[in-house]
Amino acid sequence: MPLRAALHARKLASLSALQLDTPAQWPTVSVLVPAKNEEDTLFAAMQSLLQVDYPALEIILINDRSTDRTGEIIERLALLDSRVRQIHIDHLPDGWLGKVHALHQGIDVSSGEWLLFTDADIHFAPQTFHFPRKSCSNVDPRPFEYPSHHRPFASLQQSHNQHRQ
Image (cartoon, rainbow, N blue to C red):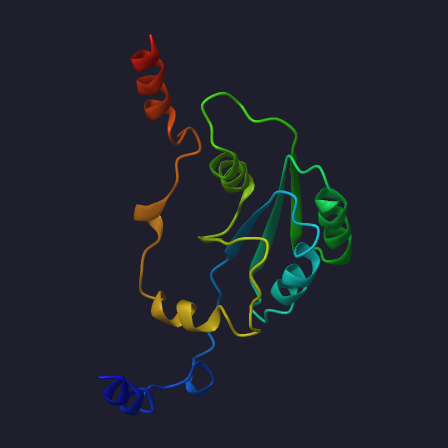
C-alpha cells in the first residue's frame, strides 16, 4: 500500500505548478491570530505571514491576556505593517473560553470576506492563499456569515449553571 501511494503521489500537481488566473478583484481575507504567552514564536511566525503575497490581506493579532512580551511584539508588528490590526484583551468574561473569546473579538473587528483562524506559531509559505482562492472562487461566503451578536457557548454555559444549582 505505501508503494502504491508513493507512485500516485508523483502524479499530483504541486501548488507551484498550478496556473492561477489573476482575478479582477481579490476577495479580502482576514487572518485571525489569537496569542497567549507566545513571545518565543510569535514574531518569526508573523514574519512569514507578512511575506504572503496575497494582495487583499488583513491580519488581526489578538493578545489574549498574555503575561509575557506578546503584547509588545504585537504592537511592534502593527507598527511595521499597516495590514496588521491589534487587539489586547485583559480579562475573560464569564461564560467564555479564552481562545474562543479572543477569536470572537477578532471576528467583531474583521472586514474580510473570508476568515482564516490560525495559531501564533504557524509559519506560512508566500503563496499560501492562492490555491484556496482558486478553489473557493465560486463559493458564496454569505451562508457562513457570523452574526456579531452571537455568543458561542452561551447556551452551554447557561446549561452548565442550571445543572450546578
